[in-house]
Length: 400
Image (cartoon, rainbow, N blue to C red; front, side, top):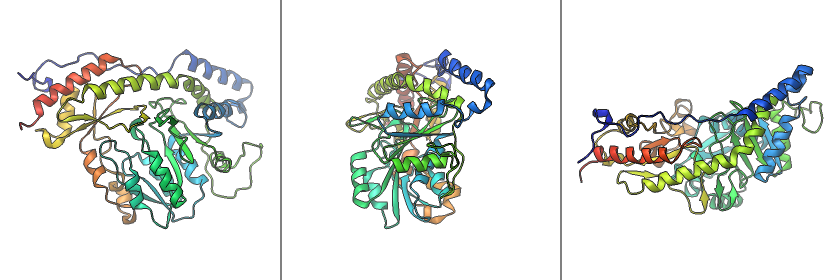
């Protein structure tokens, strides 16, 4: 007999609240106090030109990822903007990126007077594919921005081969993929530049907001640093001759102090998320209408959240109703991730040259649930999520 849903008056799978993520401790507090005490003697030490924490954070971040250079910035969007600006492409050049991403991936392209071209995705990973990228390449194409959505990895080897064949730059958007691995290499170190969001809620944070851009290319690093620092060079204390338009995306010393502490915690955070995400994927693989996201062979996701695919043709209700039933069982899932592929948002749709059709992206978003299994969760949360998914599927699956 099928167990009655909590939505319809039955007993929920879980009554206790989902665990609150504990992201900060005494170490972060002491790091901030240290900077504040120093600034009481010299207020100039609160900004990066007068302090040392931001420079130290860049050094340690680059070392952690095995890169030669790192440039800190104020947000993850800024980190991508640094990378795009450093490439100094001619206005009107095209940049291929994923049709499923955050607007922060796209606005830096637009603000540099470049044209975003949206490639379709693998419906099982929601990540852009080499085949889709190849279809978008034109004589105007100058770069590819790959997005490792939710901590799952894009198939980078064939993407890098495409880039080499067509002389294209590759920027990795790792906002959701801290310390994820592709065939033994860390996300962000495979392309020409890697960009990370340090917003609160990500695998690690620099205290609310923050970003980091890494590269092995000294010229790209120098240009990204000039762009972030309003043309104040990292190698002198004077303003450099302004040779291209720049913004001020400087990170503060307080942000950097928190980031330095968080960086040390990152390996254990990712290890726990990977363990829980893998357990969830294995535990729901037997279900008929619900499936985990595909993980490419040779990769190790970092699971910013877990993607759960729902075959909406095989259930009697809408995806939103399916998600609500799970929430009533005590499992805090989200539905669809984003409302539509990027090219369908109004600010892009009105400019028809940007509005490419990506049928895989559009269909996949209509059947995606998202679940946060963070490092403060335990196997109990995974087990409850599996029970709830089994229960809701049993109630809503269409009869064969």
